[in-house]
Length: 182
Image 1: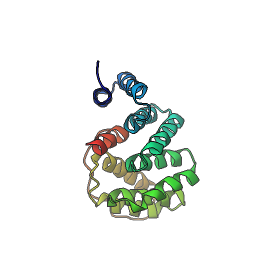
Image 2: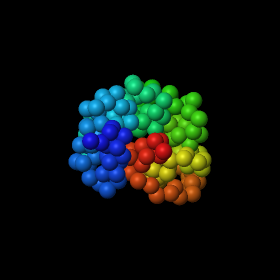
Image 3: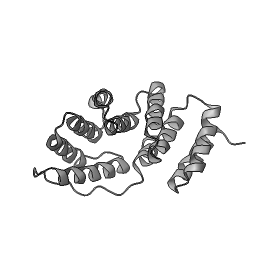
């Protein structure tokens, strides 16, 4: 019989090859054995987000943060999902908690989303450019922010100098988890 950590690694592998069913099955096995496993709750929430089950993703990320509040990438992604759902007040609360992050890129990215929540897309673009110029330690997060920067650049008429291209990474949620857990 496998232990919860082995199931978690199987879930991460299954996700990396796009097998959502196996990934979720492994994660549910982890959570059956350890219901308060914040990493498994987060990864399951990430699967939900990737499958478009955003409300489940939001609930799962909140549950993970209730257990382990210092999961900064989880908090950032929760803020992003809340913004996507037009829940700016909740998003601002989550993102503002990252002002004290020791990761300057993550701090800049969260400030960019806060600017966006305050209807300041040019300010958001500038903060994204700043964050992309800093090492994030998370290629998946940097890749997502690069794409977001490019999206804002197309929408904004203001000329903000584009950052150097971010490295390619795995899908945001799972790539960010692998980076945070290594």
